[in-house]
Length: 218
Image 1: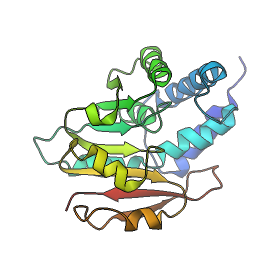
Image 2: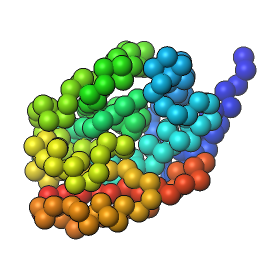
Image 3: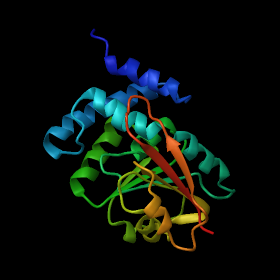
């Protein structure tokens, strides 16, 4: 059987990030990659077209925020549920990747585009992700409270927190993935947000600026 070169690339990247993933997570991540490539031919879910691009640009990029997701979940005071919401999840980034990496954490994905949620539902079935819930909805209509709210390519920071303020649990965190330093977006945050923490990221194999913005209510 031909060895999947992507497995070594993924394993090396996970090691470079200093992460520990549950048994079988690597194979599940590559199965997700293959589903993404298959559905992308018809649904145009991502600009990445090769297995190598998806490993670097999507899988490792999403996994790079895992230590801060873990910290936010650990900071959730009982009886707050250790749950996660990924807003504008698209093809499942980063939420589906986080669901694979942390199967004990309930993860909800929401997107307003039906073809994307159709893909996400099929991926959840094929990957046997029992901790994953998918909603085809606008974020304004969502209900519930979440310890961690994620976004990767959803909106500017001010819109992100304003549209999801009703969903963040007391003491919860927003984690927004950005490219270059989003200085103008940080300056436009509302007064009810605490001083933000800007964390540079260095996903292996991705030669681009990446940052994580960590936010809480004041």
